[in-house]
Amino acid sequence: MLNNSIIDIWKNGKAVINGWLSIPNSFTAESMAKMGWDSLTIDLQHGMNDYSTSISMLQAIANSSTIPFARVPWNEPGIIMKMLDAGTCGIIAPMINTKEECEKFVSYCRYPPLGQRSFGPMRAQLSFGLDYHQDANTQIITLAMIETQEAVKNIDEILSVENLNGIYVGPADMSLTYGLKPQFDVKEDPVFSNIKLIVKKAKEHGKIAGIHNGTTEYAKEMISLGYQFVTISSDYRAMSTYAQSIIKEMKEIKEIKESSSY
Image (cartoon, rainbow, N blue to C red; front, top):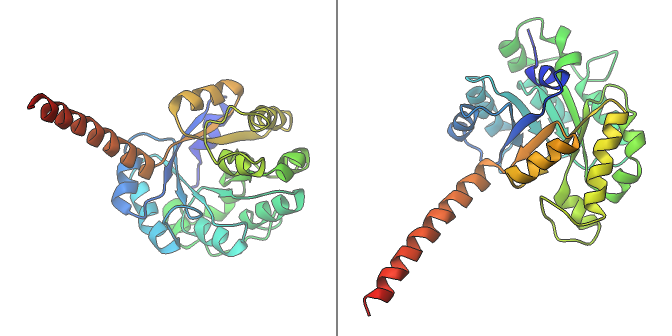
């Protein structure tokens, strides 16, 4: 039976803490899954992952209570359906700019009569049982990424799409569309104003709002604004940032010793 605990978290009015997997490695995925994230998103768009590497990562995540998501490379039915059949419980689709694009995205994630998802759940059925298809339409989560000026302009129409669970803000791409440098934790307008507007609109439409963050401080601020799906950093960023801090600290000690020897 497919019972998506992320939906229960939202029903209780709480925020989901989502991790991000950019490294195509099952041990990294297993390690992250054991740390207590509510969900982990395998990034097939900008991460180094593809469909083949995702399978072993999903198997690794299955040894925990963490719910697996995937950010697909594009709003394309083939990869969306394959990732669902592989056992992901939520799909994040990039660059959704119009109501029509959002309707297509949602349809790829739902079995008829709600959508056009083809039947053949393979690993999903192995993981969640032979009755998987009976629960999938209500338990699979759909998040449309809002990343452009066009998407912000069409936000009410996008949020009106039936069976869409919510939206997910991509602050780096949104910054680019306004002539700013790509970045997380944006405080510059008009992007920051958009971030506040989007969560307000999501609540008006009864949808969930999510956002990608660079730091825990900013993520906490987003939760206070009403965001209920917050991603902080990624496996690669966490590893590289911590490694750099170690190197920096040790080199400072080395430099102090060398300077004191003169």
